[in-house]
Image (cartoon, rainbow, N blue to C red; front, side, top):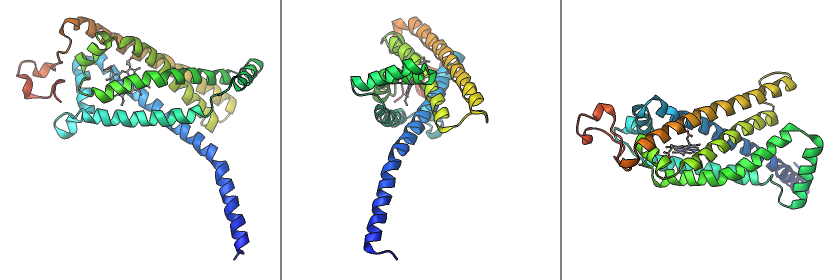
Amino acid sequence: MGTPNDLAVGAALTKRRDGRLWPARLDFLQSASGLFLALFLWVHLFAEASILLGKDAMYRVTMFFEGYYFFGTPYPIIITLFSLFILSIVVVHAVLAVRKIPVSYRQYRVYRDHQKLMRHEDTSLWWIQVYTGFALFFLVSVHLYTMISQPGNIGPYASADRVVSEWMWPLYVLLLLTAVVHAAVGSYRVGVKWGWLPARDPVVGRRRLKWMMRGFIVFFLLLGFTSLGAYIKIGIEHRDQVGERYVPTWLQESPPQAGPTEAMP
Ligand code: HEM
């Protein structure tokens, strides 16, 4: 048994060690939230790409996310709640990332001079993250606010109308570019930072991971821009009927109330 003095010293040491662990814990949380958001984005871009399989396919995906196949009726509130959850992860991730950004011109110069001197590609990648992350904070906020406030306005016509007639396409072009680059570069940096490399040799592992990063950027930009092109095409064709909701082909002959339509709450 230690004396009260020993116990006090022990407690103080534990507190000091815990204090030293916090930066590592916050770093881990930043990586984990970033990876989660990257995964979400990639799944999301696949879901959006359902429009490439036709309007009915995108309609089915929308109904799935609104819970129709579980509850027998669509609940757009699910989209609102899920969007709020994603927004909270974005905020946590951004707050944790802001700790690392130079806050004064002096700090900024030190970083920049270091980068020029070292010519280290990974330091340049870090700056890409700072710029794209900064832009994303504004771009994602606008998009998520739309999803939170108008969850019932998602579907082949509703989405295409938003993209074209509500002029969201310029925002989506910027959002797609910044989000895809940020997610791929961020995942590469997480792999390097925590040593999750696709090879035993770190040099080979890092090189492979960088190729994967480039591959993800090219693939998801192609997928995203092709889908965006499809929404734009539908939005232009539908310009004179803005507000009209898509009725799936299997319901087109029967009255609209016979099944779920985009217009349902
Ligand atoms: C749960 C939250 C989200 C929902 C429900 C959602 C839903 C949608 C929907 C329905 C569209 C199609 C266009 C439209 O209807 O306006 C879209 C497009 C898009 N979203 Fe999201 N989104 C969410 C979060 C995000 C986040 C966090 C990002 C980026 C980090 C993002 C990036 C994009 C991009 C880039 C497009 C354009 C699609 C493309 O180019 O293929 N979304 N989103």
